[in-house]
Length: 367
Image 1 (tube, rainbow, N blue to C red):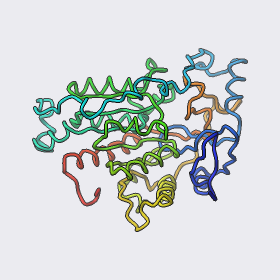
Image 2: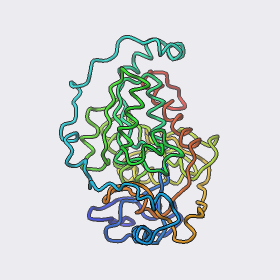
Image 3: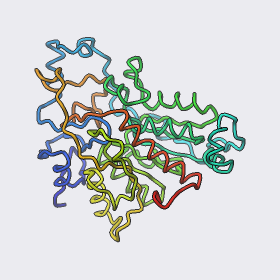
């Protein structure tokens, strides 16, 4: 297919000319290169240097970075979720607990806003969140505090020290632990009656069916891997699963420029442009309206500053990650900056759409 590339052993169908403009660099795919990435929230690497070689060299010679010298634990499980019993035996709809039919007084202020019937609908709703980083973690918290009674939380990754500035489950003491499991504990502490299903897995074609079981009432796409993001959105659209997508929360500073609109009407945001083009190529939105709400920003992407610890030897990953992680920061070409007031603002906008739709308190603006 023209203007597309093959990455690794499987074909990737992300449009290279658009991604190249998006990353402001020339893509040079190599054998074994990971899927394409975007600055939705996490680090994206567009540097041409071999980060893996740089990291190995630093570990052998020592460095000025305490986290590297401290030898933080490295995960060695390679795509462990593929053999995990959780994906081969996902709960079915009939396995879910009965819906909550009595409203606890903890929801007093929310009932006064949404009404009794609206809160009951939320208590009986099932939302699946893909990506539990700076955006997804805040979405999970917002929905937990909005009485959503069933949640599936999906993220393949473990907490890294560099997540602390923007991810709710990230603390120095939780480095190396599963993001999904930690966030599930937090959700249960907020909403003890909720059914919460943490899944440590990477969303791709091989895991899609399992991770969308049981079928959710709403999907929140907070994935920052472009290939996986396009696949998830295409799958939800084809199966008529309501979904909202969050585009680029990284590399921006002004939350007043965040917008919610149909993907067909976004402006400025380069990731939204990539998603729109890829979905049109698959037959969605060819008549104009995409039918896909997105949270995006009209603020231009900011080029990353260079931290002083990168000056001598370039970027060095300090994250505890799997050796074959599908989205390790060592494999990315550029590391964009992020701020919690931006990722949280994107998350709050997305959560508002989900809550209003599930409680039937929607407006024409959000569809």
